[in-house]
Length: 328
Image (tube, rainbow, N blue to C red; front, side, top):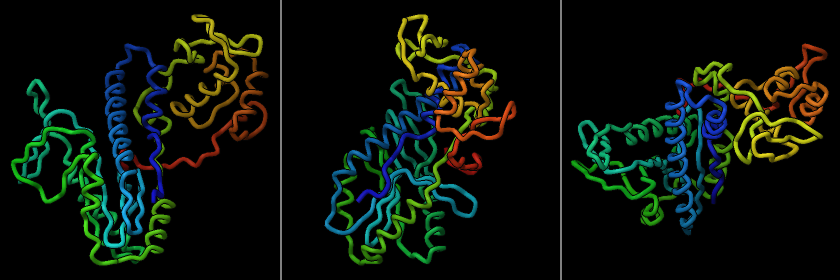
């Protein structure tokens, strides 16, 4: 049974909002676009895993949780997927590597070889798994749960794998993962069906989703670099105008009534989780403060204060994760 589904990473959502609001020649554009590309590929690989995990329906009680982030001893550790069975808990680390992968030992290294022969040393997924196993073991012991934990690295798509030495940690492809899981023996029941359900629920309830917003602060981008204007969903031009109770694009003539909602969301993702009437007018290039007040009143944001000092703020509790400790 799946106790937690995977959702689109907030950082990925934020990067998609950021790029259209920066000048194409912005000094950080290459870095941002590369970050977006890597995160899209990573999320695509995880979705590929999720699709294949739907095939895994064993006869014994089990729990599956996707994209779990827990905190142990002040450190956040994120696991792509978790499988809980009566006999063990398995952490699944998903990797979406392109090209040929050479796996070396002593020390363990993963080397990516491009079609042109260029070699790049990748972050070691086995070391990542080992670290997560340590923290998860401690997390469980604090709750007086003793359950064997192991890990597996699943490559999202078929790569050419070359092993100079075969590592102890199992490496497989996501399409082969269900068959491998079926082959694992359940020889001794360590926890019952009820205990699996209780543990899965506790893990889900303790999940702490990473909140990277506002991105300008996280990525050290001046908020003044964020370009204002309501973006036309039809042609992506900025600067739609509010006329006759609707937004109108001056470039393609597309119209709509609620496009300021996306602009407000962009502000929260990129600049701040609070906004004043004046800030919203400046960001949407809207001159009418009364229309702005109506938009903000219907936004779902909480209104705080009165008069010129008032502002609107998100009701969502922001996770103040230390980015140095959290795996982004």
